[in-house]
Length: 161
Image (cartoon, rainbow, N blue to C red; front, side, top):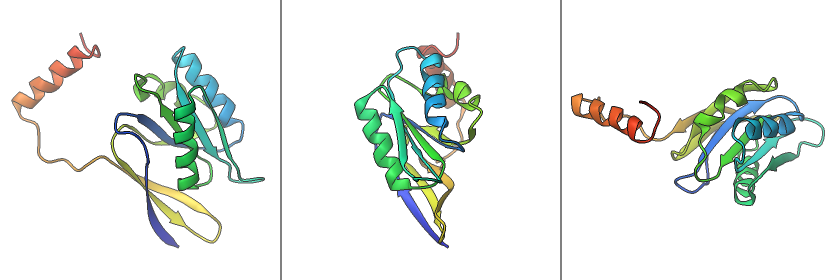
């Protein structure tokens, strides 16, 4: 077995979701879940088929996000993994519950805009996602001023009253 690291290639502000699913039907079901959760959502989805023709299957509503999803899926190459790249102004927070309710979705590895590395195992059979490095390590513990800043930020962006 060989371990490798695959860096996610994306613009700094773009959010993405990396997950695992188990059936070719996932492409259509995930697409439908996203557009039902957020009407007008712009995204690209790519799924690494793990049997049969073993193609990268794809769908979406935004050509740039589709290109990111396909390119990263090919680079990762882990069976049954999927990427969703969300266009500017769309966020995982608004689609994660709908995505988790898709019957074929097994797990979500990450949902982030941070720089991300995926730890991949390569065997004679194929590749598997072992985990992700999402952003950086903590540099300390928040104090009262940082707590106040966090609470204020959440109210400024409309997530708290």
